[in-house]
Image (spheres, rainbow, N blue to C red):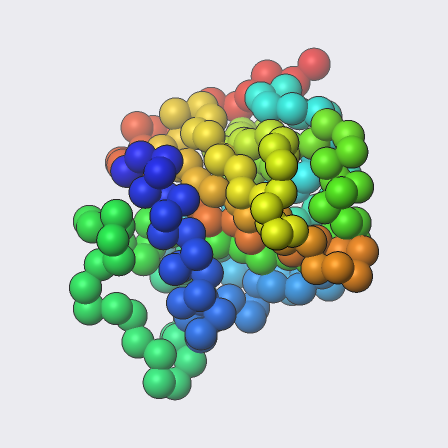
Length: 195
């Protein structure tokens, strides 16, 4: 699936989650993060952070984000909300287990985040924190308080996606991440060298 398809469907997926696909367990301030869930199907949570610097050689963690969790690991949807019978436009052939999401509210305005060089980086797992699977530089001009950035595949992970940063107007920013596994992973990604 190409990047445009991911961007077009990002809003739809976020709305479905808000309607009750189980986003609640992974949303909130990063400091209040609940323990990460594992669906037991090889869908480990993926730690994510806003780092100083730019991809692929990110610097220190500036803001921790809630782990990016596969949708099929989120448990049963809320009563009355069912998985769509037909795929969303641009998402044909994508299973719920191929989509991983996270929502975090960070204690900084979008303007402050954009004032310095930052990037969103997603890691393979807590145990393999040095293995990056997707990364995107936080750059661009917000529209109506929102900025969407591409999260590019790292280390042949098979994951790409989008992050949406929304300035809430109260000095915080909501960071929504959606990753899609674009194909079968050809083995485990290699760790990104660190200096």
